Image (cartoon, rainbow, N blue to C red; front, side):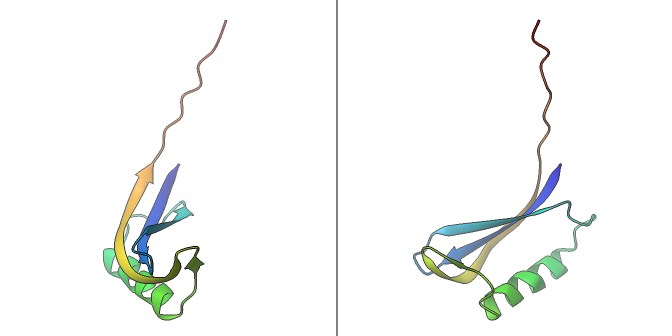
Length: 71
């Protein structure tokens, strides 16, 4: 399953990550940046280290899980 991870820096200077399942692909970098800017502008989320102050990064992460059959 793929996830879109949005990484911000908070008032304490620590990284805060929000993950969104099943991002629309291909990912539009301009739309992601605009959404992240809006999250900061609206103070939509906070963290234990204070308000989100700036964008750090964004990435798509894919995790593959393979079950192992145990005899």
